[in-house]
Amino acid sequence: MGNPKAFITIPRKEAGYRPVLERVTDFEEVEQALSQEERKVQASRCMDCGIPFCHWACPLGNRMPEWQDMIYKGKWKEGVEILHETNNFPDFTGRVCPAPCEKSCVLALHEAPVTIRENEASVTEIAFLEGMIKARPPRHRTGKKVAVVGSGPAGLAIAQQLNRKGHAVTVFEKDKSPGGLLRYGIPNFKLDKKVIDRRLRQLEEEGIVFRTSTEIGKDISGAEVMSRFDAVCLAVGAGKPRDISPTGRELEGIYFAMDFLSQQNQLILGEPLTHTGKISARDKHVLVIGGGDTGSDCVGTSIRQGAAKVTQIEILPKPPVGKNSSTPWPHSYPNVLKTSSSHDEGCERRWLLNTIEFKGENGTVKEAVVEEINWQKAENGRLTMVGTGKTETIRADIVFLALGFVHPIHEGLLDELGVVYDVRGNVAVDRESRSSVANVFATGDAVMGASLVVKAIASGRKVAECVHQMLTEEKD
Image (cartoon, rainbow, N blue to C red):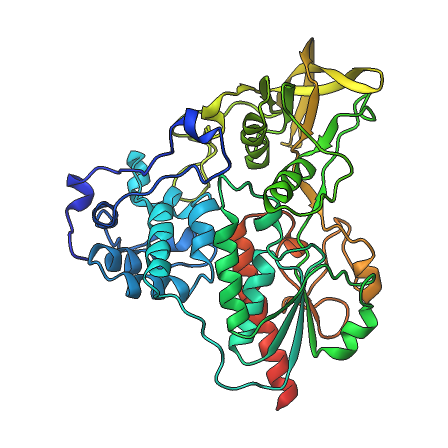
């Protein structure tokens, strides 16, 4: 720890975003970067606490104090190497992670935690620019073959970990390009796809084979996959969107958020559109139902497409600003108001509204009727939604449902492989992440439901160890 008083003398400084009037005209990343010297100064604020809650809160167990110290000392290579010991893709998490590490930082008590997420992105960028990150193919091959189904963050993590153990890994992806949620779900203004592509080049140089536009059960049978590979790892995500059923739900112009977001990414990539018909917010009054990150992404994308107005509604109460006594540090992720870069670009946000009806003209949605609600605690302690009877009509030329996801989109895959899934629709696994079928494992959102990119990577790394142990035992 080079500067034990920096957290007292140096204030938190964020890189900030590009000017609003500039960034809404394109889909380039909105976040700016500090200089290397400024980044070193920010890293010096890490106190190297006796109990590093940041390390405890990180699903990957990243050792923040160690690599912060390396950044402070200008040892970028050592810093990124420490990061890579626990995180395969800090360039992804450095951009899209909600940073539970920062929420648990001791300095968060004063609402000025170390800029861990930004530091993570910066040290990785410097490492790539200066050629510090290179392919690490295994020296020896074990003769074992592994199929990974799905190329999102969990699939890529398990593929890299198993490949580096010497196993031959083939990744099957039903879409045209690898990346899963990273490529098709997260807007470019948060994660430029060039960031994904350079990692994919590294993985290919390490020996991983990618078979895109290949769907198990359609382009290749489950029986063939099972016969050709010693282990199969399911990393298919949790892409089944949650729906609602107000009167008028069948009207045209009401879309799931991911259909909208993935299509915009396909347009930028120049790929064929998987959704029938172009979904455009241009010159329309947009209603986004759902107040989370996916809803925020719909807001930013609608604004860039030229929406006339964007309204985002949420069924839950408006969180407090700054601190929330009901989610105390460091045990709980703070439930506080989150204002994203997209919200700053122009959006009306409303809370405690439940959609009860859609109205339309000529079969196309034009309005949404919403009711103000309250949440009351029932005798069993659970919160119950109670309508107030007060309704309101919101103009809605187009509606995006950003209500989260319920389980994997099976599309016959699990039945094709004979894999059992639980009542929630997620793949059922034991403690070693094995499914009901021998040598078939599952990881990421397919098991735990929709979650964070950082948790998916952590899950992939964990399951890779289980698969490696099984393959090693078979070899012995």
